[in-house]
Amino acid sequence: MPIEQRGVDTVPEAERTSGPRDLVAILLGSNLCLGVIVFGWLPVSFGLGLWASVTSVVTGTLVGVAVTAPLALVSLRTATNLSTSSGAFFGVRGRLVGSVVGLLLSLGYTALTLWIGGDVMVGTLARLVGLPTGGATHAVVYALLAACTAVAAVYGYRLLLRLSKALAVVMTVLLALGLLAYAGDFTTAAVPDTPYLLGSFWPTWLLSAVAAGLSGPVAFITLLGDYTRYVSPERHSSRSVWRATCLGLVVGLLAPQLFGTFTALAARGGLDYAGPLVAASPVWYLVPLLVAATAGSVGNAGLMLYSMGLDLDAILPRATRARATLVVAAVATGFVFLGHFASDAQSAMTSFVLLLTAIGTPWAVITLIGHVRCRGAYDPEALQVYNRRSRGGIYWFSAGWHPRATVSWAIGAAVGLAAVSTPMYEGPLLALTGGIDCSFVLSGLAGGTLYAVLTPNRAPGTATAPEALAQAE
Image 1 (cartoon, rainbow, N blue to C red):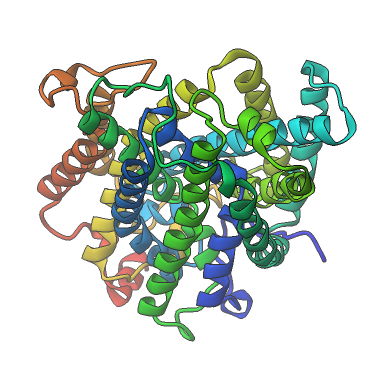
Image 2: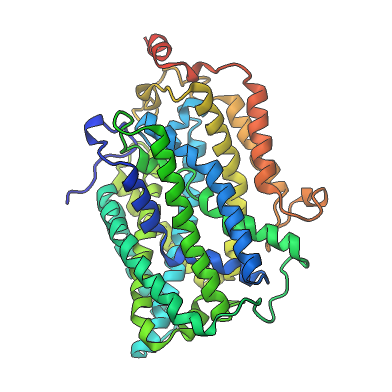
């Protein structure tokens, strides 16, 4: 299979051969991995029992999918990735906001996947063959996982799609076996010695809904376009693409996360997940667990790394996608080492997802408002001005930036950061929200409302297709 040469340029119609079924496959197969499973452990680590964990994760995921899934329709119309597409609203240079947000999101989730996958691999191999569990062993395993992930990401979309289709079947079987393996130790009660993280039930439940549930769909706010740009709007309707995206996200996220909740309770993993998971596993499930940690991590991290390569390619047009992917692979591996040797897993995960959710949500809301206003009509050529190192076009606005959209995002992100509550940082607005983290809601409302107020009329860049062509001429 040849290496994909296409970066964030416009995908020709002849190459747009994927369909809704491929969307479901890639969203399901890539998410059935320990990097997503571990988010089901978070509610348990916060001190919640089974039903509180399940309801918080399900609620957060459904809300997140409702906000995130429509973004898939943007790249269906533009034939390029979402950060580049957002140039229609932020400007061809202002869309760097989306590229940076996407790069940070993918970087964090790639590192997290390699981190938890590597830890489970080391623990499993220690039980199977007596492999030493010191820092050197972890370093080698992390490096090997990262190398396999980089190869998959460099080869590109077609290989990752094939891998996701295979993983959708293999990982489903492995997780089903896992339910049997841990069923004997399962309990619905909260793990002892894990009191409510925020002191009482409802604030902790809401934290879980955002950190464990909502964060899953939000991680895809810049990723969905990587897949739908290969879907042809001439052969597939927007409704079918939206339905496939919703199905893939809901099943692809809830299945592994609820498995994580189940196994965390069974393994009594209140303070840690990887160690208790391996220790509680029956001997017969160690090999399936090793396969799940290896293959699932490569599939999920591969897609994240692929998206990171596209975002860096969008930021640095002179770089090729393959070179950009190798650079971000090295950076992500560095974050894995930092996470393992210098961070507490729960605090690092919780802080990361809450902060990035606060920053990414207003960008997603503004992009969705712009998409609705322009009714899905874009000028694909004008979106590529920055990538071609030229100037002008209907999305040029002011030196390539749409100041009102950029200011709206910045203020929305600032409000979100001021309302966030993490183990490492608490924003000043928490005093007004009773100590409850409302950063997702407030950042989205602030950014979206301000954008709608500052741009009451249809912006020049959101003209209909005939108007766009006339203005470009």
